[in-house]
Length: 439
Ligand code: ARG
Image (cartoon, rainbow, N blue to C red; front, top):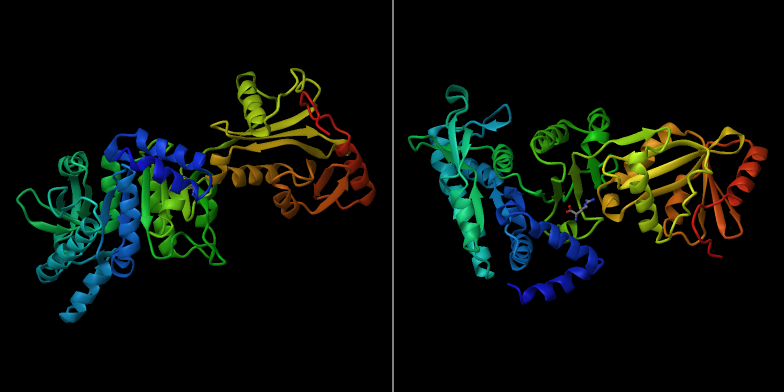
């Protein structure tokens, strides 16, 4: 395993920066082996994208990462039932599983499990199919749902055993009662139960779409449950299926540490999602609050200075903060994003400093900070160097931009031209607070 790591790290580097990739590889390797990730693979992916799936899993395996793979077989089951002339019946979103349905379902699930395990083994990846012994179930509602299991206990011995011997556990959504009656478990519920039992660092949903879509059909990059959940649930374009998905993800993350996250992506994009800051797909985290302070709290000052100095790679003067008429500080709980707002000319808020670590940007913390800032300051102005790497982004956000020497001054919410001119002059002449002002 160790000899391939450098090669693979280099390959990962080609996705973005190798530093970035290495950082994630370290993060993922730090947790206990069987707690890196639970990967839920829908039946649709097994049907349409087996090769890409196997390639993505093989890649992780080669890196010494052992995700626990859990798969459904919904479309295959629908097909088999249709072939047998049995109508698919759902109640409360669950497949009613009569004995007749189970007789057809069980071999289909075995077959799909074997297809994935065989394909992995064929690719040189050790894999172990786990069809039984993981989920101990009670009847969810025998009368209405038949052989549908409600998970009472998750047994991880076989899962851990597989990982310990270097094999990827491939778990099917079947469980059994204490007496051995086989039961069908809804794949999303099985995923949730497995996640609660293992508390993994990452939960990954591989879907053909590769993420959650916004109203324009574009993949939403990051969702913070703390900041975005309520708003999303209230959007008219968020249909009931997506509402359910979001609610399920929120429940799933609830008992997990704040560092845990859910990625919804496709097999093709999985490597990029995992090993870059920006990712490829939708990242859902509990998220963190953006707090508002009227004065920089003594306990936060050092963190704020370190954040700024690292981001800009320069040193602040020791008196930089004393000379600033502060209006307020917005700072993320983790201290990885902050915006400092001053009293500007004419009483208009001046955005003096804004900073988000690259990793936090991938989590959507930059967007959350900007949202909080816009809510606080309907009108504001700020400046950035012409060659600032995010000048393009500022340009998009601002309503006006004005060049002054090596500065560009941006404004939002200012209509009066005379006032705008005063703000631009004021911004361009401000003290930066840095020890040395490069030309
Ligand atoms: N690589 C990181 C992770 O998997 C960040 C991914 C960011 N992804 C996104 N869709 N914004 O945890």
